Image (cartoon, one colour):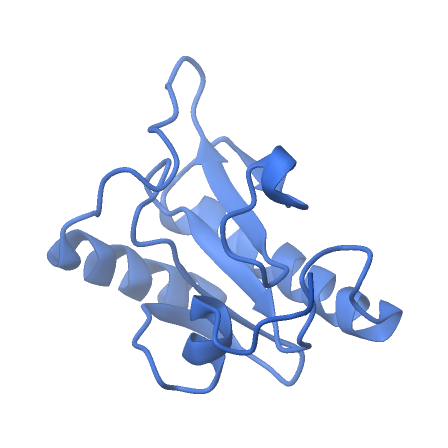
Length: 139
């Protein structure tokens, strides 16, 4: 499968679609998942046009991982989560639905269940509130 430059994340990166952005640098963009599995579920999307882990240039991957580390710490503080997961899916068999490499930062609380992935859109007011808290936690 060739990289599709019209995928939703490529369009967000180009500013063609809106997103609840929390962080951006030369390597990547981080924004809230609008169908979160947990409060504060954030995506880190490398700016390099690659479908998955095996396609992305190593320097672009390194930049995206640094962003993931930085944003994960802010998400954890912002939503007062004792833990978090990092998920990165490769290919349809792994559950990847947007074919632009991305990293999920999913806050975790002991005993809390996940919501199903990509099933229910969060209210805009809730997303704006969490966005502001993560941006503030990033300083």
